[in-house]
Image 1 (cartoon, rainbow, N blue to C red):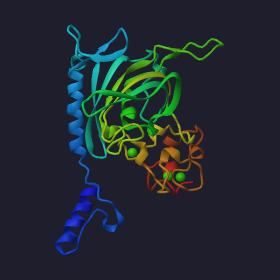
Image 2: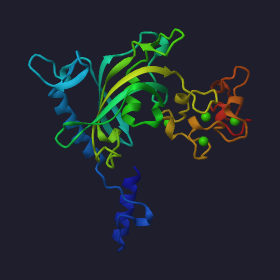
Image 3: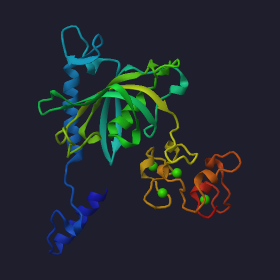
Image 4: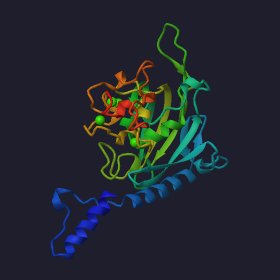
Length: 291
Ligand SMILES: [Ca+2]
Ligand SMILES: [Ca+2]
Ligand SMILES: [Ca+2]
Ligand SMILES: [Ca+2]
């Protein structure tokens, strides 16, 4: 990990008698304890889940009362393991409604476009909930690569609703609906943001109305989720031609002057063309020697 390398470098330099402070080489040393904060957040969220329940009558998380099932024991609560920048997190997802059974409304990937409503709250230092943002009247389109990581992963547990528009306003039924419990490291982290203090864990009530399956951000005929040549499930960290634009936002992925969508052969699908006998497993659109 980069920070460990930098620490090693600092130690080496100390050994030969140079000072090593927070901005050695102009690169700030980040000594924030991400793993420790993740554990603190997880403990707080668990305490919260043990002491609250989901009131179905009012669709609200409420303090536990006699006869109710605590969220931690509610079979509708999922635990999702997420690793981000080498830190392991637990994301807790309460699924009130999974979403439409129609297959084409299937689960979004973490880079798909979604139509959502939400209401966000943060946990303060005494694990009370404070409102900070909501979008509860008109749903909003956004893409899951450009939101907090807790959303990117959490929404993949839900499906969209069925469009029942009949020459009137667009309406959806049977959409996904639930609550995300997000540790600060998958939200706004150690800095927080406007209206959210540093290292705050978040609670979001969410509704998922619609999904654009196989969202293709750069319109290059390769779905964004497949623009992941290193296969780690995260298309944000792949930049084949090193031009600063990750492949899923780069219409010419190998910078050979031929747009990726034009390296797809007769069927227009760039993912199944391999014309380099010296490199038979590399698709043409990622191979600058083939154009
Ligand atoms: Ca990747
Ligand atoms: Ca690129
Ligand atoms: Ca691309
Ligand atoms: Ca090529």
